[in-house]
View 1: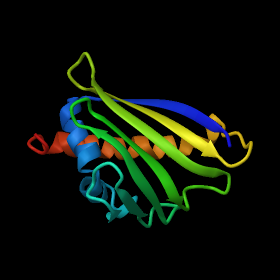
View 2 (view 1 turned 90 degrees about the horizontal axis):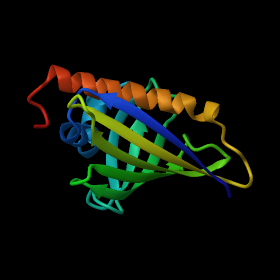
View 3 (view 1 turned 135 degrees about the horizontal axis):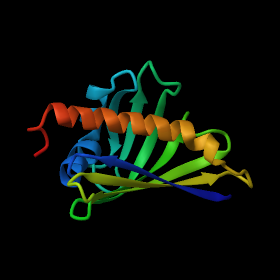
Length: 160
């Protein structure tokens, strides 16, 4: 098994605490609301939403995938970090065993946020994952992120 790591950064004008509440803590409710063709809904299969929780995300009609299951590995509301692992679903190919994500929000100098994501692709066998192969997923994540940001800009009293 190989592990390939990729890092991504997004910037936002939204302060990190507010963005964390919306994009991380309330993602199960907010993302289907702002992107219903991408994500139909999320259900908790096991746990209470905290560390160890297993969630099933069902994708909308606009997605090429049906569902994924992920396990919450860590939540730190004080340091604005969240980690989870994609453990099942048709977004995992026959060469990827799992994908672990570490997300951290930090303040940017302009009062907004920098969202730093590290993705660890765990492959089956000696398969190598190239940057081009994960680019489409990164672009979709960036699109969801921008929809959440637009919602927060249009609803300034939300998630205060």
